[in-house]
Amino acid sequence: MKSKSNLEVRPITTHTILNLENLKEGHIFYRFKDKDAYINNLISFIAVGLVNGDNILIIESMKNLPKIKKEVTQKFSKEQQTSIRMVNNFDYYFSGGDFNTATILKHFEKDLTLIKKVNRSVRTWAHVEWASDNPDAEQLRDYEGIADDFVVRERMISVCAYSCNSLSPILHSALEQVHKYVMTDDDFTISKSYKKP
Image (cartoon, rainbow, N blue to C red; front, side):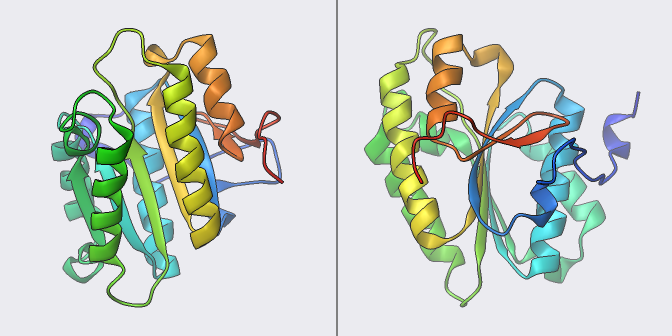
């Protein structure tokens, strides 16, 4: 088992032709189980974005931010780090009440405006959380549907990461309907339930 400070950037393995590293745009539902694999995949996502010249927005939990910031500082130059914006997901998902769609979208729009000042493509990674023990699947589907419309319109790549521990079968099904791609810690496929062309 790797030590937490010795995480390595590794390609995301897959048994399909599709691969997150080769994707230039798309809305991705990432259901993760392993925290080290999650951090490795996030760092790989950042590395590919930097190679592509993207601006990168990371919306992450307070408990993971110190580890991610440490990895970013160790692996990327100061100049590269200027293309990475990291924000606490509490501001997105809890500051306006538990999972308030209007508040989330307002924060997202503000952060994207800040990082799109130069004319470059943007990629986003959001660790989505909520306080409720029984989140509303319809509300989550509506929010992610709005996000999907935005991602498709802006022709960007956006990963929405959810811990498997927080997903009921109903939530899992709802999320597959509004993301074109589904990712796990070690697999990447097209969603069979995605409702848009």
